[in-house]
Amino acid sequence: MLYDELKKANIEALKQRDSNKRAVLSVLLNKIKLAEIEKRTSGGELTEADVVTILQKSLKELNEEKEAFVRAGRDEMVKSLDGQIAFVETYLPKMMSADEIRQVIETLPDKSVPYVMKHFKNNYAGKCDMREVQTVLKSLNG
Image (tube, rainbow, N blue to C red; front, side, top):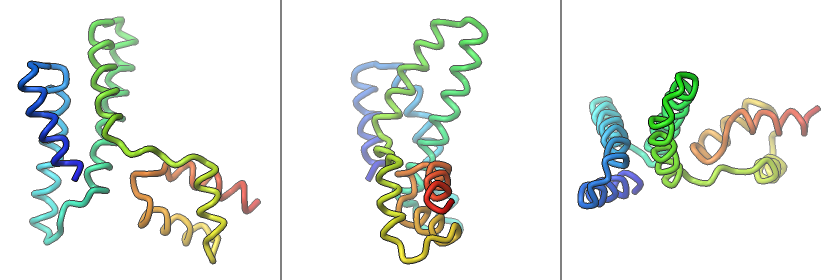
């Protein structure tokens, strides 16, 4: 599971004394642990899709933080965040292209918006951008 891979990467970063990777891994592992506790209290189990969602949200936060440092002219922080962003991206699954999304939609028996969106959310969570799915669906329907 991705969570276990992140824990191993954290240990490696500790051994290598890589403070940049350690910083981002600490945040990620804490967020995942909190989500796991939250799921357990509601009677659920943390899934791979949950971990991917946490990584995607963290990546978005890192990009927003980077933009703020770019505007402030803090080049050393931008460089540090670039490294963290690249590191997080290595753990995210490859996103589906518009052509791959189109192929999946064409195989579906019902091409209505609610059906297609539900299908992608249930089967491809974290592997596709839902806005891209919507865009492709609109181009096919109209």
